[in-house]
Length: 353
Length: 236
Ligand SMILES: Nc1ncnc2c1ncn2[C@@H]1O[C@H](COP(=O)(O)OP(=O)(O)OP(=O)(O)O)[C@@H](O)[C@H]1O
Ligand SMILES: [Mg+2]
Image (cartoon, rainbow over all chains, first blue to last red; front, side):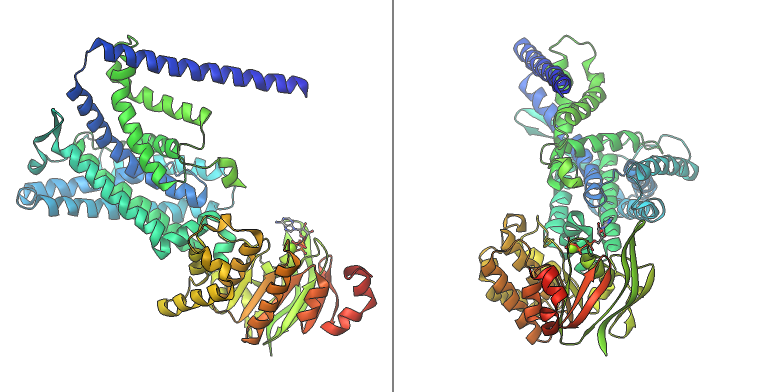
C-alpha cells in the first residue's frame, strides 16, 4: 500500500516536471521569437488565417469522429477514407465541369454540385462501413471494431486505388476564388476566408440538427442510454445510420473544401493524414462533444500554423516549418496524458459507466 | 382476453438462469403488481416483456400477438411503455426534451404540446423546470419526469419498475395516487415493487416472485392477508 502510493507520487512528479518543461519551452520560445522581431504583425495574421482555414477542414472531419464516438463509443479509424472517397470522386466532376466552362460561368453552383456529389459518396461509404463492418461487431469487446476499422481503412484505400489508379491529381483552379483581401495589413487569400465561412455554416447547420431536430435529440438520447432510448420507441439502428450519414456528408463536403484550399495531392492515400489530424482535433476538443470537435479542429490548425514559427524558431530549432506534423502529434500525446477528456469533454470514465 | 400474457418464460444472463418458468397475465384495465425481494427477477420480467431481453424458452403475448417477433421500439409503437428502474431519465436532455422523447413515435405535434402541458399540470414542479437538464432534478422530480415521459406515448400498458424507490413518504403517496388516476383513465398497469404493502393497496391482483419463479398469486386483498406474504414482505 505504502509502496504503491510512493510510486504514484513519482509518476505525478515526472508528469508535473514534464508539464513545467513544456510550459517553459513554449514561453521561452515565444519570447525569443517575439523579441527578435523576425516576423511582422501581418505575417502573424497570415499564419493565424491559414491556420484557421486548415483547421476548418480538420474540424469538419473531426465532427464525424466525435458523432460516431458519442453514439457507439468507438473510434471510426476509417473516417479519413470516408473523406478521401468523396474528395477523390468529386475531383472527376470538378475536372469535367471545369472543362465544360461551367466553373467559370457558375462558380458557386458548380462547386456546390461537387460538394453534393462528395457528400453523397462519402455518406454511402460511411453507411456501408457501418452496415458491413461495424454493426455485426456491436457488443463485441471494444478492441475488435477498432481493429476492424483499421482493416476497413486499408480496404477502402486499395479499393479506390483500384478504381482511380495511384496517380496524384490536382483539383482545377477556381478563378472566382483567386485574389486576396487586406485584413490588418495582411494580404489574406480569399479562398481561406471562403473555406472558413463554409466550415462555420456547416457546423452551425450540424449544431442545429443535433440540438433542435427530433433526430438530433434522439441521437443524444441514444448516446446517453441505448436501452432507455429503445423504450421511447427509438429504433437505435436508424439513429446510428443517421449518425454515419451526418459524419459522412460533412467529411465529403470537407473533401471538396480541402480541394479548393489545397488542390494538389488528390490520391487514394489523401485521407490518412487529415484523418489522423482530425482525430487529434476531436480528442483535443473532447471526443463525443460536437462543439468541442469544431473548436479542437480550429485550434489544432492554428497551433500547427503558429507553433513552428512562434515556439520552435525561438528555441533555435532549424527548419521549424517542416515540423508541423510533429507539433500536431505531440499535441495528441500531451492531451492524452494531461487532459484525456479534452477541452470541452467530460471524463471518459463517466461515459463508460 | 389477457392484454399481456407470459407463459413458462425462461430468461438468462449468460449462464445465469434469471427467470425459471414465469407465467402471468395482466388483463385490460387492471393494476397488477409483481412483488419480490432483491434479485428475485422483477426487472428481468419487465425487460423480457419489452423485448430488451430475449427469453430462451416460453412465450410472451401482447394483445393476442406473439410479442417476441417484435423489437422493443415496435412494441412501444403498439402501446407498451415502461418506467425503467432507477428512473433512467436522459440526464443531459432538458425536462421538455425528455417528454418529447416519450412522444417519439407520435407525429401529432399539437396534441403532443397539449400532453406536455397536461404533464406540467399533473406535476407543476416539472413545468417550473422545463428548460433545466434532467440530471439536475432531485430524485423525486426525476421519478415524476420518468412517469410523465412514459405517459407521453399514450400507452395502453404501463410497466413501472419500483416507482417508490428512494422517495419520501409524501412523494410515494403522490406517485401512487397518480398511478391510480392513470389507471382510471384506461391505462393498464403492471407495477413492480419491493414496497409490498402500498403496492397491494392499489392493485387488483398480485404476483409474488422468488428466485425467478412465481411463488404466489391472487387478488391483492388475499395476498395482503396471506401469512406467507405478511412474514416475508410486510414485516410480520
Ligand atoms: N445484466 C445482468 N447480468 C447478469 N446477471 C444479472 C443481470 N441483471 C440481473 N442479473 C441477475 O438476475 C437476477 C434477477 O435480477 P433482477 O434485476 O431481475 O432482480 P430484481 O427482482 O429486479 O431485483 P431488485 O429489486 O434488486 O431490483 C439476479 O440474480 C441478478 O443478479
Ligand atoms: Mg429490479
